[in-house]
Length: 126
Image 1 (tube, rainbow, N blue to C red):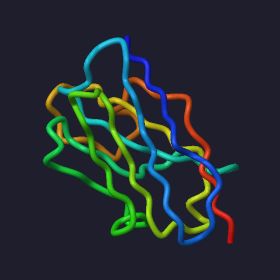
Image 2: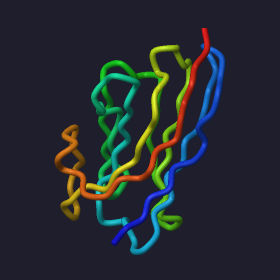
Image 3: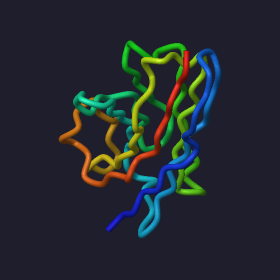
């Protein structure tokens, strides 16, 4: 069993930055791809970014490419999401998740992820 706890969310003005963290406990996640998703009110949960098990490969949604950066520190069992140039449309609850397959490259599909955190709220004011 893996527990994921996100932190770092908050209220920020448009153009500002936030850094989200996701700490995994229960077992190491160093052999698994990790993902960030977000869900705005009244909308489905959507893919934001993913990183493969080693950190060598990343993938981003078009809406955040060039503004967000996903990274990981396997020694700390933690994955990060650096968010720059934030826009009001980035407002959502952000979730991290663990891929179901070891040594995978990551995925944009929610169904591939088995463990999810409780989420952290990000609000961007205009």
